[in-house]
Length: 450
Image 1 (cartoon, one colour):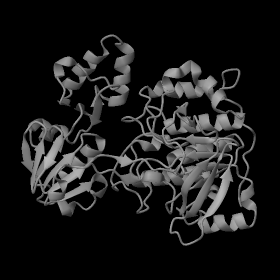
Image 2 (cartoon, rainbow, N blue to C red):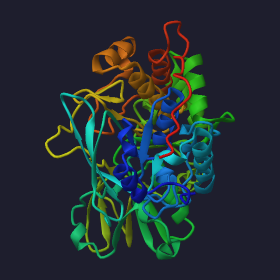
Image 3 (cartoon, helix red, strand yellow):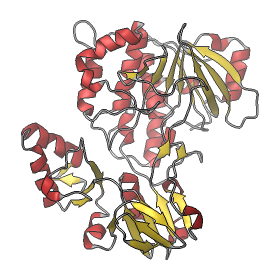
Image 4 (cartoon, helix red, strand yellow):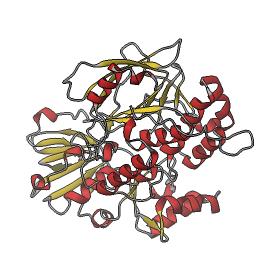
């Protein structure tokens, strides 16, 4: 897919030839979020370029070896892409949808692959930011370019986050991250402990259960393991229907539905009925419900410490383990230059409150989104840039929906909205024209062919 796309060498040549003096919008990352934002901008006649560190677009789903995810992961991220079909997507299916999006949206000449943005130096005064751009292989001198607007769409899944485990230095086995669960032959006949009870943990558990001698799951927070379908509908659709129909007894009815379908609660008192998706984590897994319910895969509380081959939990229990798989997420990628303040609020969940012209999109959902949030965020960013909005104008536009404009705990991944439908509605209203209809497009997009 990357053969026809320009690279850093092409970028350097275009800069030397003066061609790159025109684009004023840089998008960091050519995954689903970056391409969705670029597509929305093109529809408004804006002129973005995208910088992708990998050798091909597609973000975490690309087949490039830089991807930290395991190849057979299946999620619903394809719903983020414009013109794509919502639903579960495999690696191959998502790659094809990326190619389809690039062709349909005219993005081919705007995506510079194998091109890494080393840091972003935003300006407090004249807006925009300076980007230090380099070849992913570091084989050529980097470039320093200024853009009026910079959209960070680099995603979250770059650097695996391994927790500090007490006694880990004395552990005689292996402590690995979930992204290393690739070659299953390394786990045959092994006693495996999985740290975490989220969707990634259950995906790893489903892969390792048939080959491991022993499999144990450990979680530190209240979690419900639920089936994919409730009353024949996907879990997110079913929960929304229950909330809309039974507003005052929603929690109790959701608990009854989940219990009827074999849901399992971990470290939660079932009699409390505390299973609200806004407060309790829900992990969806059909394949692991049976093994967990039968006791073949025991659930343990948080990990306390480890010794040679023994793992101890906070309740005093223990088990033997040869491998500890940490499904503990990823660290945020720091992109701001040293001296910039990393702790800031995002206006409308997209605009840096301190630096004008520094935007963020594609922040991860809590456990899945009923709406293509990346496309919505891209629409809001494109509309705000097209209208010349700054912080105050954007804040005014989203003020009626202040509940969906939450403070970012950390940059660039402070997206903490639980009500995705409400956030999507806010974006539609904030980016609408005076008549309430979507804002008119600005004519034919610029054909940036270099």
